[in-house]
Image (cartoon, rainbow, N blue to C red; front, top):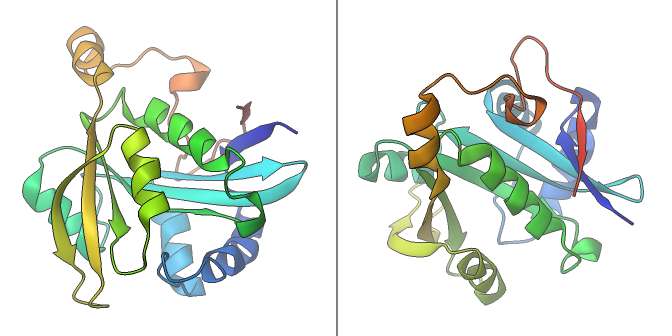
Length: 198
C-alpha cells in the first residue's frame, strides 16, 4: 500500500487528462494540447501510484520558464525566483489517504535546493477550505489574491519560504553534487524513469 512518486510517462497523458477533468471546480479543465505543452515544458511533472494504479499528478515550473498561466505571471511580478506548483490532482477515491502529502514532500525536496520560494494558489470561490487548511499545514501563507482574467475566478496566492535554499546556494551555487536524488526529475531529451517510494 505504499505511494510511489515518479516521473510521468508519455503514454499516461490520456489518463492524466481524464483525471484532471474529473476533479471538479477546484481545478481548471485541460485539453489535450495544453496537457501536451505541460509534458513538453514542465520542469516537474510527476505522478503518484498506489497499488499499481495512477492516483494523481503534480505539475510545476521554475520562475525562469515561459509558462503562460496568469497566476504564474502574478508570482513573477512579485518575486524574482520561485518554484510554481501549477496544479496537483488526486483521484477522488484517494483523497485524504496521504497522496497529496507525498507529492508536497517530493516537490519541496526537489525545489528547496534550487529555489528560495514555493508558490501556488487555491481558488476561493469554490468553498475550498480543506485545500487552504492543507496548504497552511505545510507552512504556506497568503501573500495576495488574484482574479484570473481568463476565467474570472479569484485565487488565494500562497508562498512558502524554503529554508534550505540559502545554505545550499552558499555551499554549492549552481553546481549541485551528482547524486541520483538531486538530478532534475525531467530532462527534455531523456526523461528519468526512476521511481521513488514515499
